[in-house]
Structure formats: structure tokens, C-alpha cells
Length: 87
Image 1 (cartoon, rainbow, N blue to C red):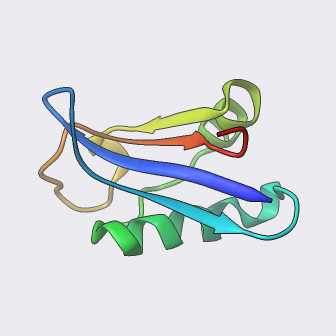
Image 2 (cartoon, one colour):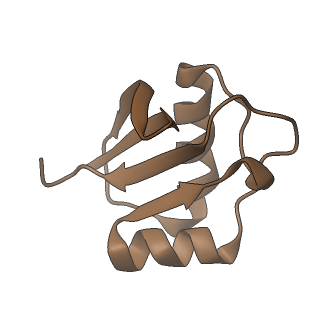
């Protein structure tokens, strides 16, 4: 089962968060869909996803997106996703 915790951070505080739960195993080719679903739930734009984000998520079970990773201006400091499948 895929469980990804997404949270919007401002000044090191959680402003909004949600957990995406989907059946089946984690698939790298679905990474954009996972992130898009989380962003839609949080009401934020979907960031530009680079290979470094995917690699960091697969290696360290989290990834951080900064305002520079978004195609439009955002009003938060960072967007963090974390593998929550073991919680």
C-alpha cells in the first residue's frame, strides 16, 4: 500500500497536511500522480518534479520542494512529502 504524507510548511510549522493512501505497491512512474493528488487536496499548485526529487524519495523516503520548484508564486516555505507506509 502506498501512503504518502504531504505537508505545507511555513516558518517551520505545519500549515496544512494530508495523507494519500492508495492500494498496490509504490511505482516510480506514478510519482507525478501521487504528488498531484496530494497538492490538489492541499489546494496548492503541483511542483515541477525533477529526477532528484524521485531519487531522494526512494532513497531517504522523503522529498522537499521549495518555492523555486513551483511554476507560480507560493505563500509557504516548503512542501514536504514523506513515505508514511510504515506508520
